Image (cartoon, rainbow, N blue to C red; front, side, top):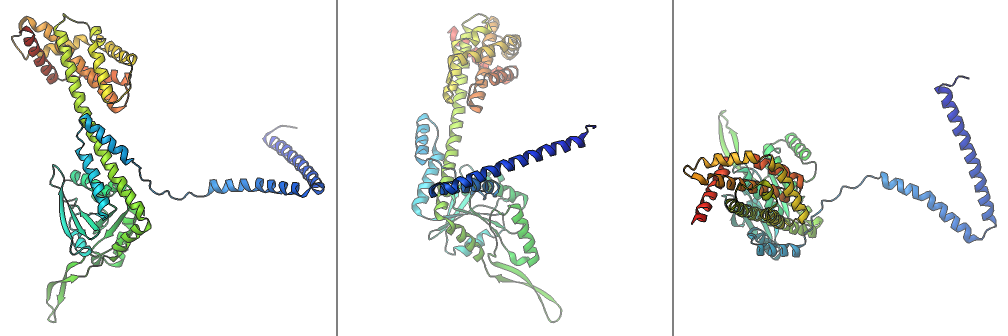
Length: 484
C-alpha cells in the first residue's frame, strides 16, 4: 500500500482511537473496583472519597473561571510617602547647605490645610469661560486672597466661604503657558477636587493641560458652561466629544453661571431693537457632581490631598538637591582643575600617564562620587583613570595645539609659554575628566567606565576656545604669583 499523507493521517487517528478505547476500559474497570470496595468499606471512607472527587472536579472549574473572568478596573493608587522620613530628608539636606525653602513651604501648606479642615477646589478654564460668574454663584460672599508665584506675575486667587475654598487660576490662554502649567499642576496636587470649566469642546491647549492634570489621578469634574447658547443636539454632540476625549474617566455636567445675553426684539412696525436680559444661574449639576465625588470616600480625598502635597514637597526637595549638587560639582571640578594647573607649572613637560594616575585625578573622581552618594572603590577609580589615559595618549598633541592657540591671545608671555601651554593642557584634561565623571554619576547613579571614557573624549576634543582662554588666564595669573 502506498504511504501518503492521507494514509498516514488515518493510521494516526486509528492509533489514537484504540488508545482512547483502552483508557476508557481501564478507567471503567478501576471505577467498578472502587465502587465494589466502597460497598464493603466503612461510611467514613466513602465520605472521604466523595469529598476528594468533589474537589478534583471543582478545582479545574474554579481555575478556569479565575483565569477567564475579566478584571475589574483598578482604582488609581496614591503614592504613599512617609511624611516623617520626608521631614528628616529635608532637615538632612538643609544641614548639607541645600536651599529647602520650597519644600518647607509645601509642608507648611499641608499643616495649614489639615488644621483648617476646609475643602479645596481648584478651578481651571480659559479666559471668558465664566469662572468669575461661577465663583459668584457658588459663594456670593467670598473673601478673596491672592498668591503670586515667586518670580512671575501669575496669581492664584483663593475664595473662601465657610469650609469651602476655591482656587481660581488665570485663563491659561491669557498668560505664558509654561508659568500657568507649573501653577496649575502644583495647585491640582494640593486640592481635593479639580473643576475644569469649558464653554465648548476641549481645544488642543485645554487637552494638553487636562492630560497633565490627569497624571495625578485627582478627582475631576468637567463643566460645560453657557449651555443656553446651544440647542439640545449641539449639547449632545459637544458632550459626546468631550467624553470621548477624556475616555469617560470623569463626569461631564452642563451648567450655566448666569450673566446677561443679547435679545433681538421685533416691533409691530417690522423694526428690530437689541437689548440684554439676565440669564438665571444653574450650577446644581456641578454641585451634585462634586458632592457625589466627595461622598464616595471623603477620607480617600484627604489622603489624595496629603499625598499630592507630600509628592510636591518631595519634588521640590529633589530639584533643590540637584541644583545644589550641580553647583558643588562645578566648584569641585574648578578646584581640581586649578590644582592641576599649579602642578603643571611646577613640572617640566609632564606626561599624560602622570596626569591620569596622579593623586589629583583620584581625589576628583572620589569627591564627585561622594557628592552623588555613589559607592566606589580604588579599583574602579584606577580603571576610569586608566581608560581616560588611553585616549589621552593619542590626543596629547591636539590638546597642546588648542592650548597653544589660546595663548596667542596673550602676547608677550616670552619663554614661559612652554610651561604655561602644558598647564593649560592640564586644565583642559581635568575639566573634561571631571565633567565626564559628573555625567556618569548624575545620570546613571554609578561610575560607568565606558560612559566616562566616551564623554571624556567628547569633552576633551570638543573643548571650546573660551574654556582654553579662561584656563590660560588662570595659568598666567598663577605663574605670576609663583614668581613673586
